[in-house]
Structures are given as structure tokens and as C-alpha cells.
Amino acid sequence: MAKRKSKPIVAVVGRPNVGKSTLFNALAGENISIVKDTPGITRDRIYADIHWLDMTFTLIDTGGIEPDSKDVILSQMREQAEIAMETADVIIFLVDVKQGLVDADSKVADMLRRSHKPVVLVVNKVDSFQKYMADVYEFYNLGIGDPHPISAVNRLGIGDMLEAVTEYFDKEQAEEEEDDRTRVAIVGKPNVGKSSLINKLLGENRLIVSDIAGTTRDAVDTEITYNGKEYVFIDTAGLRRKNKIKEELERYMIVRTVSAVERAEVVVLMIDAEEGVTEQDAKIAGIAHERGKATIIVVNKWDAIEKDDKTIYKFTEKVRNTLSFMPYAELLFVSAKTGQRLPKLFETIDIVSENHAMRVATGVLNEIMAEAVAMQQPPSDKGKRLRLYYITQVAVKPPTFVIFVNDKELMHFSYTRYIENQIRETFGFKGTPLRFIIRERKEKDQ
Image (cartoon, rainbow, N blue to C red; front, side):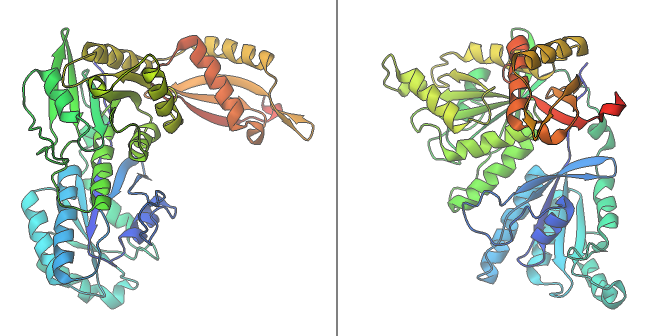
């Protein structure tokens, strides 16, 4: 049976200016969450993978709050808390020792307490434990457990806080989960037909589908058996917030996508044939690519398109250009409504899932590399030529290779891509990204 590792998800909830971004950056070890919130800055990272001791988890920033009025702050905090309660395994509730305990904190604490999700109460801006401890104790009044004092800016107390957070991780789940069913995340913009696709595959109308974007009531894991084989489909449709501004919807969608992609091996990215491929599609695709998942791009509503003999080529070219960072992704044109080409979807899921877990023998890899080097000389710089000594596969899901070379600086991205293409030419690896780690070995180590 396959073992499945699944990364826990930790979400941060808190009022404006309590230091969410500062904490995010302190944990991620780099300035990834831009404090100034300009819409359209994609560098404003909503999530990051955090490695601490021998644990890895995904940290999610549930969203900025516009500090314009008390009522708005409270409703937006409720919104954050809802996103956190729906998607996270553990919630960090961040408060500010200098602002003290405020009404909005108590109301959100009530919500979090009722969710029965593990909550770690973290009191930020405690620059001196001696000076502020009495103020920290005030937060016991929230009734959600011990307050953990930290200073995100000075990185004080962060180890203790992480210890409290990781206490709640399900150690068994993190290590292994017996499950040999292929797990497929269906992702895409609102209203692209994710629920219709699952309904069609199920043959029953289990998810509520209507034409208003954001009406699916909840995300559900759906088990589907096809040709005697079981699959679990993870749907990210749960966009319940119809009246929200676009940025918030998008942030919510990305949070949902991250949590679904994290739990899947295969990602099906749905694109609307009538709308064409958009920047938002590229953002969603980027999440699957970054997380090294096998990916299938499914162009839905193909039945609604007027076609001539060039239509499919033009559309394919457009998709490939916009999603140029994932040339390996498989592409299918379907109609969830009519069921056109849906059997092909299961066939493709099986293929990419196998490729995602494929291992290649070291001997064969080194033969391919030697041949590649003979055909195209490695680059050189100032008289020093790159030498490739050895290649071996060190992991699957996605297939990951280590190449030992004499000088990492000389191993340009383009030459790594060339080696990747040679490996793909031999083994296909359709639908899955490949990862390459370049290690240096000095000549005398040989």
C-alpha cells in the first residue's frame, strides 16, 4: 500500500497591525509577505513552507484587514477565522500586548473556540518578558488556553510557540497514511465547472451547482470508482462568499487551492474554454507546479466553442504560452456538461500518477547523461568547463534527481533543462514536473 505524507496547514488570524506579516516573515526566514498591500503584487505570498526541527508545515496568512471601522474589522476577522477553521489543522490567533485585549479579539475567540480546531494563542510585541508578563496574563480571559508571548521582530519566544503549534500535529498522519487510492485535486477559478465535472463523474447531482460564481456550498472529498479502481477527488469549490471584493475572493481561492493541492498527488486544473486561459489560471497552476504535483490541464465547455480545423491548435498554443513554466502538463479538451472525453480523464490521471511515482535506475540515467554531454558540450566560463560526474534519482512524487558536477556556477539553468529534456525523451514523464538538485564535487573527491 502506498504511504501518503500530508503536510499540516497552520493559519494565522489576527487584527490589523498585530504583526501577522512580521511573524510570517520571521518564520519563513525571508521577506516574502510584503507589508504594503498593493493589489496585483503577486510577490505578496499568502503561504510558505516552514521547516522546523524535523517537521514541515504550510503556513497560511488568511488575509489583510482594512482598518477603517470597528464593524468592518470584526466582520473581516470573522471571515479570516472562517477560512482558517475550514482549511487549517492548527490556528495561530495573534494578539498584541501593546493594544491589549479588545472586543473584536473576544468575539473571534468565541468563534474559534466553538470550531473545536486547535488554537494557539500568541501574544506579539512582548519585547521584554519581565516588563510585559502581567499584560500577557490578561489574555487568559479569552478562554482559549495559555497565551504564548513572542516578539516577531526580535524573534523571541518563537521556538516555544512552534513547539505549542506542532504539539497538535497528528504525528501518525504526518508520517504515513495507508491509502493507495489516487488523490486528485480539482482546481480552477470560480464557476469554471469544477462541481459539474465531479457530478458528471459521479453520475449524480451531489454538489449544488448554479450559475452564480461562488455558490457551491462546501468543499467535499468525493470517492469515485472507475473501472474497478478507486479515486478520491478533492474539490476546492467552496467559495461561499458572493458579495466579497475581488481581491478577497482571489485570496480565499488561493488558500483553498493550496490546502487541496497539498493533499493530492494529481492536480486537474480546469480552464473555461469560453473565457480562454487567464492570469488567474496561471496563478493557480503555479501552486501545483511549486508543490511538484502531477498536473492535467482540462479545458472545459469545449462543446460551447465554435470550431474550425485550427481552433484546437490555437487554443493549445495559448495555454502553452501562458503556462510556459509547466510544459510537461497534459492537456485535455472536455465538456463536463455532455461528458465528452471524460473517460480519457481517468486514463490520463493514471498515466500522470504513475509517472509522478516513477523511478529510473542509476545506470540508465548515467548513460542518458553521458550521451547528452557527448551531443552537446557543457558550457564553460573563463576557460573552465563544466563537468558532469554522476546522476542519481533520490526521490519520487515528483521524481527528483541529484547531479554531481565540478562547479555549480557553471551549471546554467538552460543546461539543466537540456538534461531534463533528454531524460523526458527516453522516459516520457508526461504530466509530472522533474526536480534537479545540483551538487558540487571537487576534482580531488573523485
